[in-house]
Image (tube, rainbow, N blue to C red; front, side):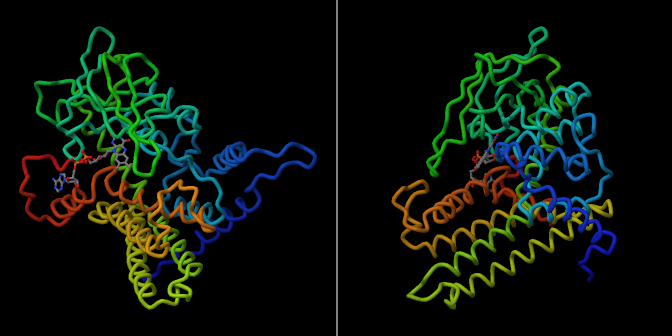
Length: 405
Ligand SMILES: Cc1cc2nc3c(=O)[nH]c(=O)nc-3n(C[C@H](O)[C@H](O)[C@H](O)COP(=O)(O)OP(=O)(O)OC[C@H]3O[C@@H](n4cnc5c(N)ncnc54)[C@H](O)[C@@H]3O)c2cc1C
């Protein structure tokens, strides 16, 4: 088995590496004012787009670099950028989920209007899918969209809407054909959040912050043509968004760096008066995790190889998000054990000791690991999907429910 990328690709790696070396961080001109981090990041991204390194699948007319699809090159760019902590493509619900969906399913005017300002961060989005009682069984959603003249009038409630309190727009699923079957009656609409018919109420999380919201829609309005895909085809369109959501959660890169951080913590922490890294049980747990991380990484390579050949990695595609969230949870669980009593304090607690910022990071990561196993489709539902669609096992007893998200 040859896991190298080959000499042509290694030359490409050298080219990317020297680009990053000479362009990041952006140096201020002597005697002139220091450039802010945000400005540096945006200048670096502009240069990287010019070189064809970022937003490769987005046409130039919408602000991307429009390169031929090459998953190996894309992987090398990710690796080299992250090695030097250089800014990659701006993350965020809009860039990661809506933009690929619009490029695949949107009307030309929708791409023209929304793609560029979304990837530059000028426009922010939230995802209005889940409702009280409709999460895993998403197709049972009840929010109604009624066409009145040239406008959709929307009534209902969304929940767990990340970032709704800051977003300019929402992409959402609403029931527009009440007579049709559950999946066939849904449409995918875009909605301006700054209007009187929308009431956003924050939900406080156990981390202490309020990134989530309940969103109440009372005669909220959106123009007739702010629909992505055809009327009643929102379910199919939403599958595109979810595919991108899971891919963005499932990368092996994140689990590798989380484990590296844990090893560092074990080196710096003490257990029974000795460095924790020398403790037999901790070493055993770290070795087991190393095995999982390697398996995740090689599954990622398999996925990459299939993509590069234009094939389909099949069941691996379904497993990556589950793998990534389970490993993330185990990594932060060991970190909590290493932090001992400090781990019992809540994130943001000012009484944390000398290791405070690293401890707070781990505590937040532990809590976050519980949430991310639910976002974009829960771990249990992912297991059902792998069993039923991947392994061909019989359907779960609740077969009349949708396997949903
Ligand atoms: C961090 C985070 C961010 C989120 N951001 C957003 C967002 O921006 N927009 C949005 O629309 N939603 C968002 N969500 C909501 C998320 O998509 C839902 O929480 C998720 O789909 C689960 O739905 P639910 O909460 O209604 O749980 P339920 O579906 O009620 O599930 C409850 C429990 O039952 C289990 N379960 C349910 N059905 C089955 C089954 N068939 N077989 C086995 N077990 C089952 C689940 O695994 C879970 O443990 C977010 C959630 C989190 C945690």
